[in-house]
Image (cartoon, rainbow, N blue to C red; front, side):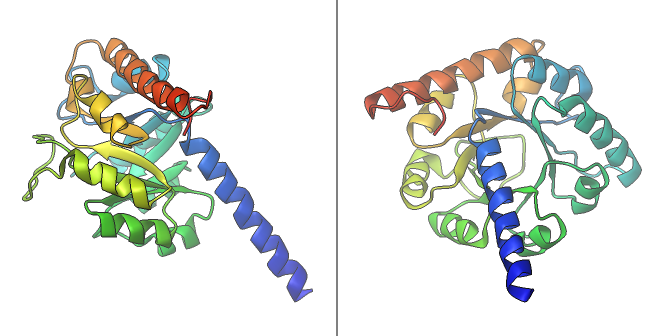
Length: 242
């Protein structure tokens, strides 16, 4: 009986792992909300991003009352249903309350182990800044890694210098998890982070600060997909997903 239960648990974990790996592989533009920078509001932004084909939406709003965050996240979760994975930044309580597809955490947040215990099927993203942090995060079981900040950015306060494209290349060599580049990425430099080894690129101000979120998401997705297709052709593959 005990062996049977253990085997079923093992199979369950494999199923969730396959599901998470399959979900993240199709991400190109990693869309993040920011009500402070948005010109038309986060619901308008997310709606346009979804219409433009975005496959991942992260709800990230800092310093808001919990009840307001819940209401916004609940509505966004419904908007994303069947169209894109919905990830909540930092807040495990909000992620649980709205049945989010996953949660994104940083170096000072709850550990991947604790989150996995509470949300076994959740997609867990983890922020890293160095090669060693990326290696450790992969060992801990994070489903994808957010690496940055790549370039100078004013979206989030940083006490450190941008890590640059070389760190992206170094991280790509040592980890196999889906790699999301973040920090100072705009339409004019997004190709460089994909060519350096990132699977996706996160953009905030470069998207939500424009008057045409739909158009910008569409253009950036086309650039990313084109870069990945060129790389696959160079390696003799035909599938645009890494």
